[in-house]
Length: 184
Image (cartoon, rainbow, N blue to C red; front, top):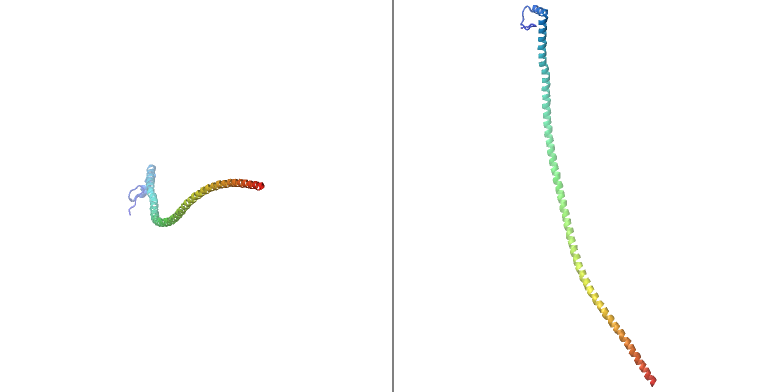
């Protein structure tokens, strides 16, 4: 085994003497201590870097596991979204079919109601025409009746006049007859 002294030289038989010589010279001892502290600080950086590097590797493993879990969750979410989309489309299609059937039913009812209304309207138009004809005939009959009433009133006045004349004639005849009877 090869051993090195504090000054970095390989093993010599006079290591103790070298150590005493080094300690006896404070400047050389101080520079060797500083070099040793510097080398220890440099080595400490590497030792400290190994710790965070191990943590980084561990974090990479955790991140990789998280990515796998996220990928599984994403696949699951995509599957659920696809199922929800299929279900929503089915519900929308069903709702559309129901709405279409209801609209067709309502349209058929409206057409039936319209046909009934058209029938009622036609019947009302015919009834109105019949009523207008009846009104016209009634107006004609009323006019004829009024004319006949006027004519009857005129005839009645003429008859009344003739009665007066007949009554006057009768009274005159009676008066003449009475006068003749008295003259006898």
